[in-house]
Structures are given as structure tokens and as C-alpha cells.
Image 1 (cartoon, rainbow, N blue to C red):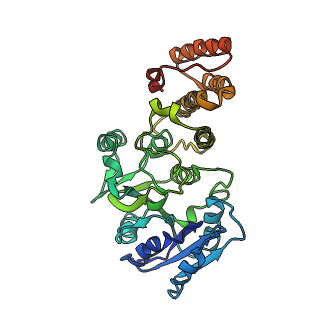
Image 2: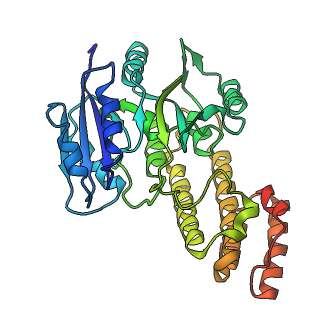
Image 3: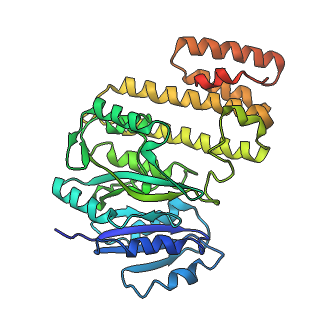
Amino acid sequence: MSNPLVSIIMPCYNRANKISNAIESILNQIYLNWELIVVDDGSSDNTKLVVSKFLCDKRIQYVELDKNYGVSKARNEGLKRSKGDYISFLDSDDEWINYHLDNTMKVLLHEKLSISLSLWRVDTMGKLQEIDKINNGVAYFNEVIEELNPRVGKGYYVFKKGIFEYSAIEYFYFYHINTLVFKKSLLKDNMAFDEALYNCEDSDLILRLISGNELVFIKNYHSIYHQSDDGIYSFIDHASFDIDTINNLDKGCVEKIVRIEINKIHAKFKVLQFFNYENSIMSYNKFEELILDYISKKYVFISYICSVHLKVYCISYLEKAIQYCNCMDEKLFLLNLLKEYKMRKFLMNIDSSHMNHW
């Protein structure tokens, strides 16, 4: 098929003031053979009215859920209704560049592969930044290319081995749900979005998809991610947030961060079951060691931020960090810290230089 149908799934919740831009960016796509399934996850604003103005285009359908279930449920409902040979996603407050589907489908069909990702730009209060230019991302990206040695195409890379492990342990963290395009036939039993996850549901699906498949990664910017004022991380300013500002957080922020981080840990545990020996460049034992090390460090971080308002949880999270720690020097440091905490009955302030080690 030279022009296969692409199903685009767009979940939304109270996005009457933003969803038009997202839909317009789909209407502006060079690639024309698509269907858009807008799944309204129980909005209480005028989202339905805004979307209805676009329904004159027969490629667009609107699905209204009876209450707010969460983004995973909404995306799964869209998947159930999809008719395309390929699946893609766009969040209702973000945008695609007009060549996204056209470029992606040309590469996928040329390479006869089933899954593609690409780069994106981040909009922070009107300032656009390229994701690979943030925090020394270019060197970070190039290091992975050198390590995994993918096949190089014209403007893209084809990864066969190692990309799952490198993505799971965040050596390669350039995947976003808005740039994902894949063959619907890849969805097997239990391959839809995990509705039990509060966050990380998108990376969870992506990692499961790439665990046993070759991946085309397009080295071009295909979407714009708008840092939303109602997104999951909207309660903190990422630009000014670092380990030294923990004491400035209120209890509500701390509780939200803990919830998000705990979900990240649960998602990391899940990736262990999708390790694929045939596509791996490391042993399962090494992969497990790296994942558990990640989890240990997350628990150290959670223990630290709880020192502000949730001191009662500090010791239990630190004990979990010790449980999953593989490095003996780090484990001894944490054991000494735990001993001190138990003696004092609560978590004292730690020198942030210690935290930066994690």
C-alpha cells in the first residue's frame, strides 16, 4: 500500500481553548489519508462545541465518554474505534508540523518497518527549544548513536538492537507519544495503554512496542509540545526546579511529586518483563541491575523531598532505596544515613551535594 490509512487518536479533557490548534495542525498535514478520533474524556467546558465545528470533515469523528476516566482509557477507546493500518497520537494541546505524517510514512514504507519516532520542539511560555539542544542533548544523542551503531538513512536511523534497553534506562530519552507512528498489527493482547498508571502510560506503551522491533528514528522535528498550565507537571516550574529548591515546595506539591515518582517506579518494574534476548546488547542480569539502580535512586530522591512535609515516610522510602541498591559504597552510605534518621526519629536536612550524587 502506497498510501495507507493512519488513525490519529486525540484524547482531550476541558481543552476548549486549545484543541482547535491541534486539530488545525492535522488538517494542515501534507499526508491526506488519515482519520482523526477525538475522545472527550468527560469535559465540562465547551470542548464538544469547539470540536463540532470540524466535523464537516468526514475524516474526523468525536467520541464522548460519560465521565473523566483518564488519558489511558480515552486513548484505548480511540484504539478500539480505529480503522487505520497505522496508529498515531496527538495530545489536544500540542501540534504537528505539516510534514509529520508525510515524512514518517515515506520512511516507514521505504524501509518496510513498523514503528517510527522523531524529534520535537518544546514551547515554554512562547519560547521554542529543540529537544536535543536542551541539557547537552546533542552530545547525549550522538553518544547513543556511536554506542548502538544504527544503520544510517537519509535523515534517519534504523535501530535493530539496544534501543529498548537504552530507552528503558534513559540513556536514550528521545521518545514522545506525539511523534509515535506504528503498525496497528503490532498491538497484541494487553498491548493497549495501562489504565492503572497515573503517568508514564505513554512511555510504557512505547517501550513495549520497541522491545522486539526495529525502530526508525527520524532526525527531524515533527511536533511542538506545549508545556501546558493544566498538565501533570504544571504545579512546578521546571526551569527553576532543582534539588536546592525542595524546601520551597508546599505540601501539595510534594504529594504530587511523590505520586508521579512512584508511578515512574512502577513503570520501571514493568519493563523487566519485556526484555528481549534476541534484540539485546546486554544480558538480562545487567539490564535488571541498571533498572534496579534507577529505582533505588528514585526512592532516595522521594525520601529526600519527603523531608519537607512528609517526614513520616522518609525512613520507609530510604529502606526501599537500600533494598534495590547494587553499589556497595552507595548502600553503605545509605545504611549510615538510615541509622542517623532512626536515631533522630525524622529526616534531617541533607547536604544537597549528597543528593546530586543520585
